[in-house]
Length: 464
Image (cartoon, rainbow, N blue to C red; front, side, top):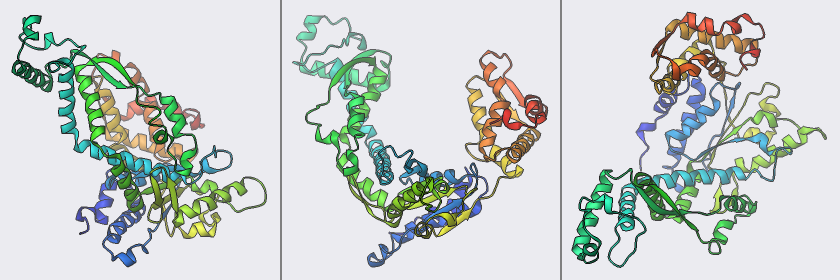
């Protein structure tokens, strides 16, 4: 086994650069953490278990890229990832869930990932089976009945009923082959067919899965599966839709869910990433009364998970020793030193993220693959409208976003979303009725549409 040369730290940072502007030090830290995971897998077995992940604490205001860095990092290596708001574990918002639920949620995330991979691997075979099922429904073999009419699917529709009844097996087989070819080629996609689909009560499934018994590793759906067999209901759908529905059903039959669960647990233990957001909100020492007691209690509950413990899930025990934890918080009121010492020690790598400058805002508008300018262009193209932003307009938007953040609450890059929506509000509203199809968004357009924001001192009255 060798290390993936495509994922050296520098290349990981380059991949993150496509979506996050600036914040080089934070990207560097997470790239090293990811690479160390790969290195650990090559270490001798007796030392391998001793090498624990170096958890990261990101410090910086909202909207500077903390969550996005962690999310994109997980996507690079297709790792199970969940984002948890730690304030949900305080006394006010506990609602019967304990901190171990974050590991259970991570396992479910991993199961979805692996199930999608496995289903994509068998898609072609599942598609063939789905088409075969449609043929069986429309033109069954002798001795089997069909509620669907197939006469209009084939060229020899004039064949009378007596001839059909006395047709040889070979003739019917040939007709089935012709029908299969037509379905495969999409020639009869618009025709209607009646198929059976699952009709389980979703409310009952929600009750069983959310009954709290999963905290003890019990899956009620599995326990009572034999008492509640899958119900079927008939639906009339187009052939095209039937192919999709039946392909999904066939792919699920071909996936071994026991193997998926086993692989998911292994993937979680080796590659899982948990992002603990708003950790500064639970920073605080016990004072004997008030919310601080709850905060410190949550910290002490989280500590064993971060340190490494075994969590029981309905799919089996999961060890959290090698899960990578990335915590983040603004720490405006509190500081990392306000966390309990044991928890501080479990986040040895601390990175301060920078406030966004005018230049950063300009880059955010233009450079990322999912930039707002690209998003709005794509949205308006659906109405056959082309928009272009001049460089001066981009600079004006960037300066205004920076100014609003300085004079009101600093919400980082999220400010651009509100400004862009305000800027293009009229165009988005009138787009379906416009005769003109090309618009240049220049600096005058920006100043005109955002004039009230510029003039008014209380900028938050207009934008957040």
